[in-house]
Length: 96
Image (cartoon, rainbow, N blue to C red; front, side, top):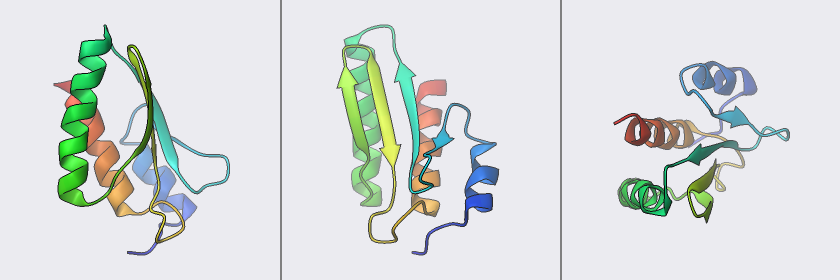
């Protein structure tokens, strides 16, 4: 899978509220805030199951009700369609 051009990433991000392109252009990220730890952990569990199915795993950080997610495709050296797809799934989980 080849990495996306910056313009393509920025276009995709218009449909991904809360997600931003990193300054170096090599990843996208978002911070999610939940009501409590249990909600944050539930989100991470649902995303982990999908990430495993996709064979595409996020870099993330969790403290209590806060989950920071960073997506990049290391093999491609930047952001690919896989990252956009997983970010879309993350937002879908939160929107439910």
